[in-house]
Length: 217
Image (cartoon, rainbow, N blue to C red; front, side, top):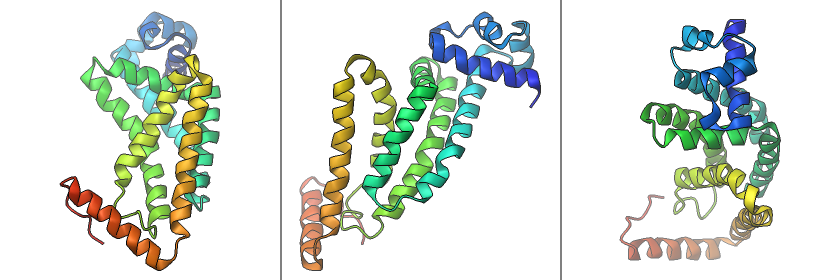
């Protein structure tokens, strides 16, 4: 990647962090990058294409820094602990702000929405793989929608960036609730085989009552 392109990408990331998606004009990005604003269009064609590249590039770089930490996780509570640490780090670095701003801008731009979803999935996929590994032998594995749960948790961490700005105590309470969920899964996993079979049967009956087909297993 050329030095100018990288400077524009870095400038776009910093501009969105400092001024939000609405303030990320070609002039503002170029000023932050220290280049002529015509270079935005020369290298990327449009501001949105630059923002797309910035969002994906910044996310790829951050994801690479935590993959090894996910590989070391041995239970769900440890995964949530890593999530809290990453949330604190990402908030301090401004990366969660970048993602939240891109999500906001994508609401009215289908092309930007496609690439923002792609960037978000760069976070989701390794977390989902980890959750599948951790829950593989759990009695709740065959009744939990792991992809859905993963997306709910990841979306929650992005949303907490906005929540913390108006209610820090409430955001902390939300994170504590996730930790208690991890503790509950641990309790279930410590049950004896008879109790685990009874719980699995109960959960499957609950699914059938809701009209959902039982999961295989």
